[in-house]
Image (tube, rainbow, N blue to C red; front, side, top):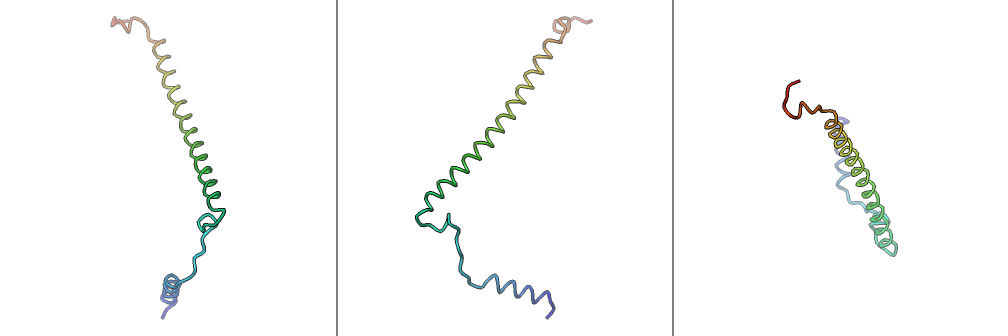
Length: 87
């Protein structure tokens, strides 16, 4: 057997062999898991609120720029152009 086959066989045996799984403190349960899960949820919602605030701020800034550009173009257009008369 060559080296590649030996490594593949070892990886397959390691992958399919039963072993104990150890959950983290948040998933294992117990006295502190409810408080820990609640804290993690608050952290997730806080980060979600920050991302939403930043995206809303960026969108508001671009809307402001678009409105400002439209207002500037309306001020610079001569009256003769608006009435249809040629200059």
